[in-house]
Length: 191
Ligand SMILES: CC(C)(COP(=O)(O)OP(=O)(O)OC[C@H]1O[C@@H](n2cnc3c(N)ncnc32)[C@H](O)[C@@H]1OP(=O)(O)O)[C@@H](O)C(=O)NCCC(=O)NCCS
Image 1 (cartoon, rainbow, N blue to C red):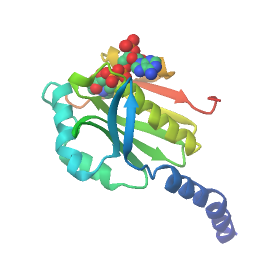
Image 2 (cartoon, protein in one colour):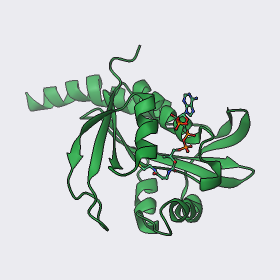
Image 3 (tube, protein in one colour):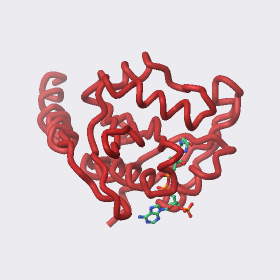
Image 4 (tube, helix red, strand yellow):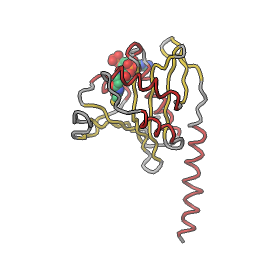
């Protein structure tokens, strides 16, 4: 009985999800145009980590909330993580990452940042929307994220895209114990 169920599950659910992931997460690096400027969109790789940390330092007052080891661990998880970078003239100017949970059908944005000189050029909007597109292709139900309660700039971007508030995580951030706001985008209702 269990064996039959397992076979049925693998044929009807597991294999389909694996196929979807293989098809839609195999992103080929390519040029993209965002608000009239050309960038190079690529899957993040281990050698990108120093530049990713550089952006973290630039946007988080010299801090790196995620260190080299954390990014390395994430980038090595090929099957349930997706990390993308945008380059302009070979400089890494923005990145985004998400974790993918086939069981809860939740695509969770773990990290997004744009280099200060490139903010307000539509890069954050573009990257979040790519992740949403991938989550929809994988037939997920939702995209979620946490954001500092004080980070009005990021919250505005997420609300403009359609995310809504979904409760607080008290004392969430390690260094200063600021609360996190959970935000969620229901993608089952997008046409
Ligand atoms: C938050 C952050 C990622 C936003 O990225 P960004 O590239 O500066 O944001 P964008 O330029 O894409 O969006 C800016 C604005 O344009 C809107 N926008 C951009 N492109 C758009 C488009 N094509 N259509 C409609 N609206 C668009 C956004 O909603 C936003 O609205 P506003 O101008 O009224 O504020 C960036 O400020 C950042 O890196 N901050 C520091 C790190 C951080 O806080 N990360 C988030 C952690 S949860």
